[in-house]
Image (cartoon, rainbow, N blue to C red; front, side, top):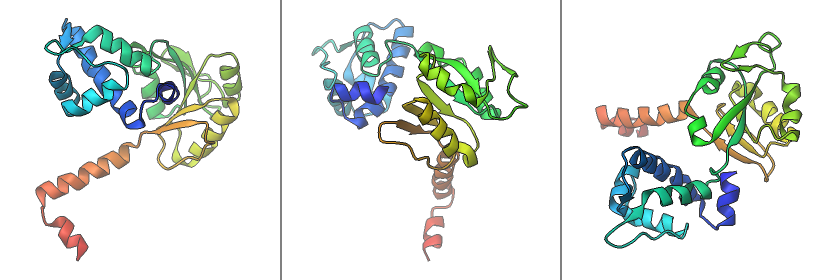
Length: 224
């Protein structure tokens, strides 16, 4: 998906990771009716330095115009094209617990080019239930989703204990892009792209910084 299209253009992984932030900032400018933006303004909105932003955008062949800046609409298209977002990507979500249902019902994916086309669960008691506009299907339908081109990205919202098994089934079904919300690490073949979202880990990191802010000597006490 994004890594593949970016790799074809020779865009570094670190730059690819920042492109969605630039795109988000540009979407905000489009909504405000802004036609052009300077590198300094866009960098501030994206939370990076202007030098880093200019270097990142140079990988897209976009250098802006001195005294004018970047054309917002054109730059947005360039970034969207680099990320593979000039087409819609069908998504299948596996695991219809609280998180899976929340993801399936989230309305923010479609405007970004991602459409949830299937929701699945291994629990017979859950299969057949309706989640939003979709009916929960059994895991056995996974191969048919890729064979028919219905889904390209698999999202794991299953418990940690079953995440590796779900990943194995996704790979066997032909999925080559996986977004993993389950805690822990999953193992996949080299050709499969995996991105991990670990909310608990992020909260733990915030807790560390909050502890240092409220108790500056706490980390020193631990070291003793």
